[in-house]
Image (cartoon, rainbow, N blue to C red; front, side, top):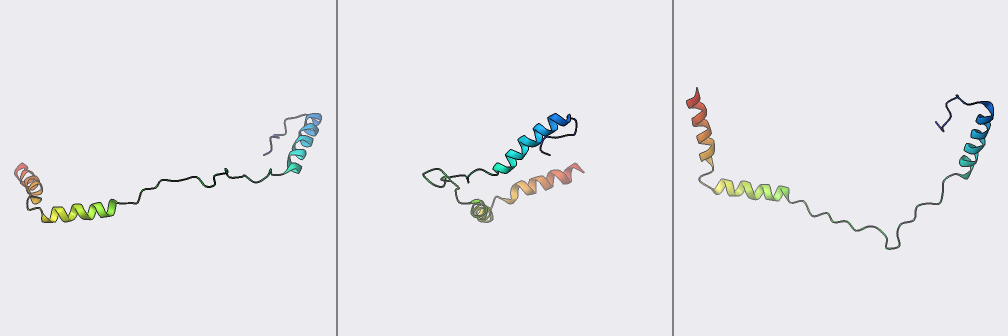
Length: 81
């Protein structure tokens, strides 16, 4: 876990132990400090997909020509059989 696999001689093991022990005794460093200007600015535009879908559906319901492609598809499908 800390770099020891059991393949070292006793002298190498002692050296490794001393090195790892000093690392563990030092512990964590100081907490991370944010930049002076504070939090980073983010740009997240508002979500507009639901509104756009509603507008599209409303336009399609008012358009008298919107069933034409569906009817053409059905006609080709039925004529193909």
